Image (cartoon, rainbow, N blue to C red):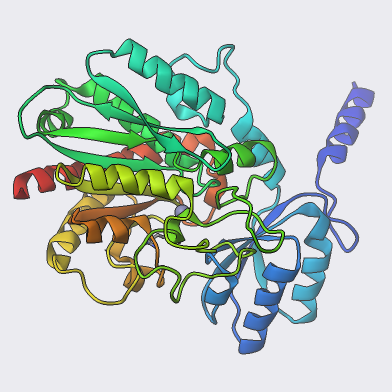
Length: 422
Ligand code: ARG
Ligand code: ZN
């Protein structure tokens, strides 16, 4: 008995991360708040020169004093990074000490058939599974779901949009939702699936979704950046951009949310292909951007509401992000976001900030929301889903239901308002 106990303790000791001054064997997420100009510069340097992934802010240029930085530090550079922070007396907090375990948890599909079962929507899914789900959803709902191929990615993967249409009322309006523009934001595609399931299962049961679907068709693009998403499942969980190969230099990927034609590549974006916020060669240079833009241009007379889903930080944003100027219907947009945030607070006890993008986070030109707004879709929102940094992009699957339900509440609140106003 005693021998067994000792054996057990020894076995578990082996599993613990080795800490201390020598080696740190796990990937970590650090929260660091620089307090001086010097510390800001060190952090900018660390996040660009070392093998790390900056989670927050989106690019090193936005790092400033007294603002929290979230940094993913892979095991192989953790010693060096820790040394640098210590040397410059930069205090930090470990948000996650063992990110590897979380990543492993997220790709594990424990049911025998990953494509079925009641917990399907409470898990993350590979791109292959999502394509299968799209097909299956159409086959199971032939009268109400149509699959539209709107284009293909730079690595030639198809971009499918689901059209949910419950009736043939003349002059019916529509809303658009896209997910997965940024590859590592896994809860985003999960939300698109969640939204479709809710629509199809609760039409004629839930009053709000029934009213919405009676008055609007819904276009859902579950994964706008399939190449990037695939890459996060196979190679690098922290990838953000698409996977197109730049003509100059060896770097890969364009930030699709900087590639739209809205003050393209001005302050808040970068023309440097190696950065996370690279705007691309020219507006709509990327096939993913072009496919979405073309589709919306073709349907701009019916689409009245544009929603794009990101994570993380819990915010409901609206135009503009490409300028600090106010949108012409700013008051309407503010009111809608406020009501949505209030409902989330009341029903889910969670706080979402809201406001125009430029004033709530930072200037970010070339975004899809601003572009759609300028096209004439006057109700245009970017949702940033859970959480606030505790798990960041690695939100555990057990959090999917609450994260999606609160965003669903916001989406429904706003859609109802749009129907009321138009
Ligand atoms: N986190 C998002 C990004 O950096 C924010 C998007 C807000 N809207 C925008 N047009 N930039 O892309
Ligand atoms: Zn994003």
